[in-house]
Image 1 (cartoon, rainbow, N blue to C red):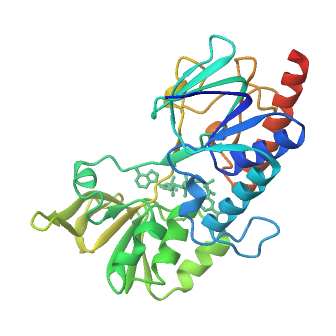
Image 2 (cartoon, rainbow, N blue to C red; image 1 turned 90 degrees about the vertical axis):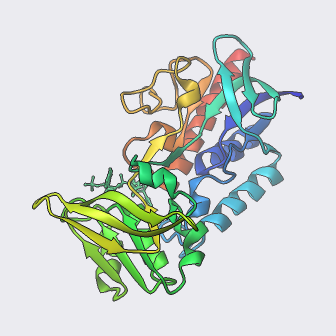
Length: 312
Ligand code: NAP
C-alpha cells in the first residue's frame, strides 16, 4: 500500500485520458494516469478504426498503445491500477485504489469512459463466458465457421457483425426496429455481406443453452410487431446494445445527469467541484467518438492547467 502524490491525476486510459495527459505534461504539470480495469479503454476491443484522422485504418489496440507510448515518452507517469473510491470533499483530492494505494492530487480529470450495456435477462448472465459476449474482437476467434448472433443496431453492433463475418459461417443481426442506427457506410457493408442476415423488429427474449457442458445453443426472439416468437440456432451471442457511463464511484461526489453522465459547464470540462474536470464518454451522452474524446481530453487538460496555475 503506497501513497502517490501528483499535481494532476487522470482517471482512465482511453483517448480522453491519454490526450489530457499529453497536453498537461507538455504544459509543465506533473501528471499521473491511473489506467482503470481495462488499459486503453473500450477502443482496445475494436478491430478496425477508419475514422480517426491520420490513420486510414488502425486497430483499436494499436491506436491506444501509440497514445500511451506518446504520453509516457513525454513524461506522464502511468499506473496500472483501478480507483474504487474518491474523496473530492477535501483538498488535496484523494483517490483510493483496489490495490490499496492512495493517490493524492491538486486536480483530477475524470476520463473513466463507459461500459457495454446488457439485455438484463437471466440467461445472459448464465451463459456469459459460455457463448455470450460483448466483445467480438476478444471472443470472435472461438466461432470460426460457426453461427453467431449479434444484438443491436448501432455502430458497435454493425462493426461486431462485420468483424464476426470474417470468421463465422453465418452472422444473424437482431435489431428491435426496422432501421439501423449505424453509420451509412457500415450499414451498406452489412447489406452487401452475404454471411450477414438482418432480422428486423425483434427482441431477444431468452438465450437458449445446455448445462453439461454449459454452452449456448440458440436464442428465442419475439417480433415486436406481430408478437410471434421464434427459436434460432446459434453457437454464440454478442450483445451490442449501447453503453453506460462509468460513474458509480462519483455518485455523491459529482453532479450526474439522469442517465449517470457527469455534468460539465459552459462547453468546458468543469464539473461542480472546483479542481475536478471530466472528459470523454463519461460526460458525453451523445457523440462518443474516439476523436471527440481525444478533443475533450485536450479541453480538460487546458482547464486543469489553468486551474493549477490559478492555485500557484
Ligand atoms: P448506440 O448507438 O446507442 O446503439 C445501441 C443499439 O442497441 C441501438 O440500435 C438500440 O436500438 C439497440 N438497443 C438498445 N437497447 C436495447 C435492448 N434492450 N434490446 C435490443 N436492442 C437495444 O450504441 P453503440 O452502438 O454501442 O455505440 C455507442 C457510441 O459509440 C455511438 O455514438 C457510436 O456512434 C459510437 N461508436 C462508433 C463507432 C465507429 O465510429 N466506427 C463504432 C462503435 C461505436 P434503437 O436503435 O432502437 O435505439
